[in-house]
Length: 467
Image (cartoon, rainbow, N blue to C red; front, side):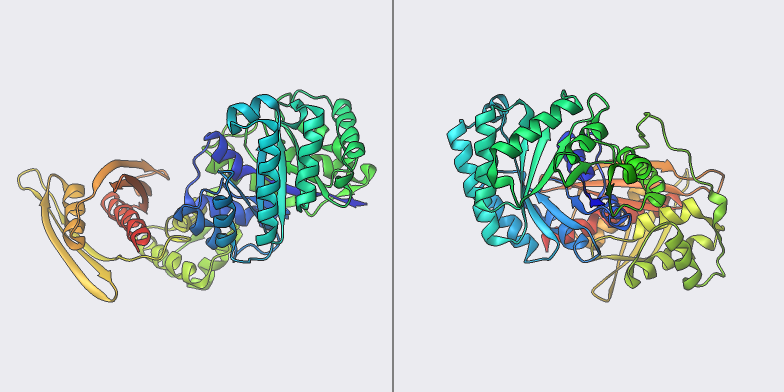
């Protein structure tokens, strides 16, 4: 049996197309989930060397157990290669991915280079990356529309410069399987440098033939297939896994995928992406009756329930989840959906500069709303007391009094997450400072409490970046 490696491009595709804007927590959860089901390589969003990029990388590297983490350069420069290598810091199971268009139209339109200059760039970037990290991949974008001679030269240049993984992309998605077989067979014959390298394919699903193209490519020597979950135009991971499950034995191929848990995994990622599925409909909600936690349940019981939802939390994150659970369960029993919301709200966040301790809000129709907020910073309790135009405005002014800084409120949004009079609500606060926007999220059965937590979440992200 030939073992095929699966590369997941969900996060990269979402970044490239801007179809889905995953939150920081969702990106981490997607990486953990894909690693858990046996994906071999996980491509992160395009690496621009921002603090958010570095933070995401440094967050996922320690928690990924089996998969290789791949950084795709957003800019094709030597500075970008060095920045990616520095961010990786010699980490094992990590690679730099250099993706460059090789068709004439794409080279001139996106790369703004002629063929000779593009070849020189490939040699320079791949060679530099190979000198800094152990694993380098080169992708020939839009390869099926490239001039045959130039494509041969480009792949030879990347292979000779040291790239161990060479990816051929049918970006347009107009080829039929037999045409793809002929195309790859010709490449293997005309590029001797491919021998000993790992041949990868990324085929478009524009004609819903992504899986067929991938299987055809395996038949002529491809050992890596790129897939995605919920990304339009990409070969769907669930569909390709189904092919392996149903025809893997007859085709003589296998993979590390855990097909049994793939369905729930795909649903979770679809839900993060706004509830889209391959059929364009929202996935059916899981039953909320499977979990029922009460205020008397201890941390071990709550931790076991969290594990059944598919999360693997650190002791520190679990402590935060339990603290939030205790606060909410004093008012009502907690079901599966609500526990999932708690985890999403308080776990996998940046280290807090300010911690909410207490708040008192008074409001009526005859006097101005007042708020008293107690925050903890470096072990010191700080207090703010102010009036405002309504309870939320008063609370935000009180926080600003503690911090000593006014931030522009870019967005304030509330939505119900569960049903009933004791429903949990989610509040999103976006603060603008220094030309940047920072988003915070709070969850509670108390709308005012959720708003305060969302503001502090955004505030802590500002403090983290300033530090």
